[in-house]
Amino acid sequence: MAEETHNVNWRLMIAFNQSNRAINRRTRAAGLTPGQPKILQYLTGDDGCTQKAIGDGCAIDKSTVTGLLARMEADGLIRREPCAGSRRELRVFLTDAGREGARRVLANSDDVDEVALADLSAAERAELADMLDRLAQNLARDNGAAR
Image 1 (cartoon, one colour):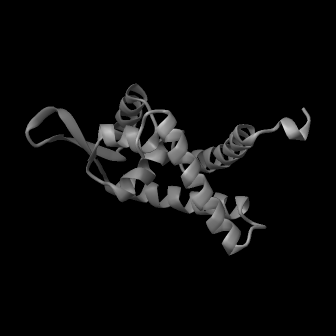
Image 2 (cartoon, one colour):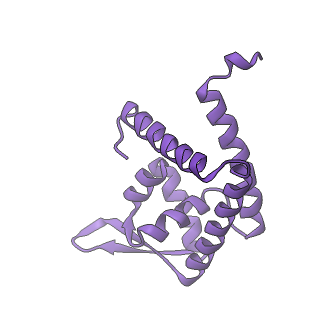
């Protein structure tokens, strides 16, 4: 395929797939399964949130979140508790094992970021992060979701 036909979407897909492979390789070595790192990382910033918040924040559909959380609960990474005043809504909390898993996930993410950003200056890194945030916001609006 000619280089000029590789649009932004193509480049994002390739970059994501390469990053995802690197993360998944490290994830397996840490004893985690795909999907768990994203949730562990999310919970480090919003421990005790609802399952819906996890799905929205991680861009994962409801049934996938439910399955991932069931596995994570069985693995002792999280615990779920009913929300006050709601029998159907559950809050999700990291366990000690989940916090340790999250620590490994964050270290793995930092490692992969360093590999990906190795030849970018600090200014280029900041600019890339800003552009990716803006792209995600634009796409979220197109998908009808707030970010």
